[in-house]
Amino acid sequence: MHEVKADLNKNRIYITIGRIENEAEMQSIVDEVKSECPKLKNGFTCLTDLKNYEYQDEIFEEYIKEAQEALLAEGMSKAVRVHRKVGVLGHLQFETVSLDLGYRAQNVTSIEEAEKILDEVAN
Image 1 (cartoon, one colour):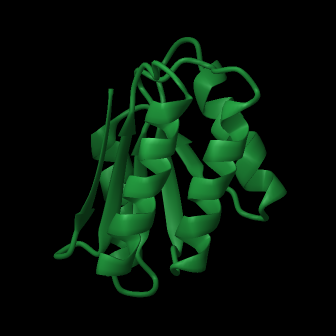
Image 2: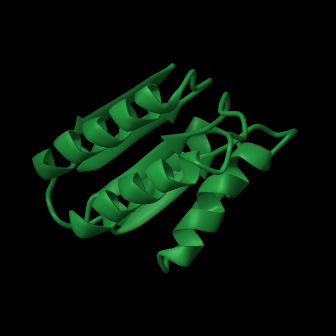
């Protein structure tokens, strides 16, 4: 289960990733990120909801990297990841890849906290 959408008013991309069934679904997420990013202005923010994401095989890290590279290339200024309060392995997979690309996202445990952090960037 996943959803990717651009909010033009907030200049923010929302990425929700839950349980991933296969590589085709992961490629679909990458494709959606690549199609939504151009709708936003340079300096956009990113909220990634990983509360229901479970750590995947390492092969999935290539897809994560491709999506994160697209976000950076399109001008993302800040990212916040929402993870579960318990069992944070899933978000660590995203963190490892983003550190390799030279950026770090803040990690929080609620959508509200993430929105607050990103709204401060916009103001």
